[in-house]
Length: 68
Image 1 (tube, rainbow, N blue to C red):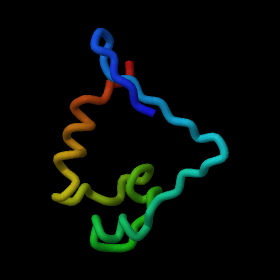
Image 2 (image 1 turned 90 degrees about the horizontal axis):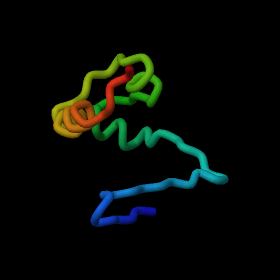
Image 3 (image 1 turned 180 degrees about the vertical axis):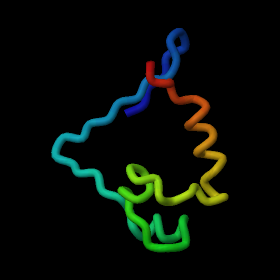
Image 4 (image 1 turned 90 degrees about the vertical axis):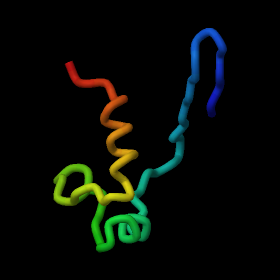
């Protein structure tokens, strides 16, 4: 769901009721050029961001709130 309010901006929502979230190992292989899983990429930080993903990574890093 995505809605727009002229005075307040953009609002989005997600419902995960009855859903599961799984990594797409084939997409990971296409992007990273080798077999890697979500744990290696996100949690263990063992995989560097490939050139194709750097602009998105930089955008998300620059716009994400910093922990207090």
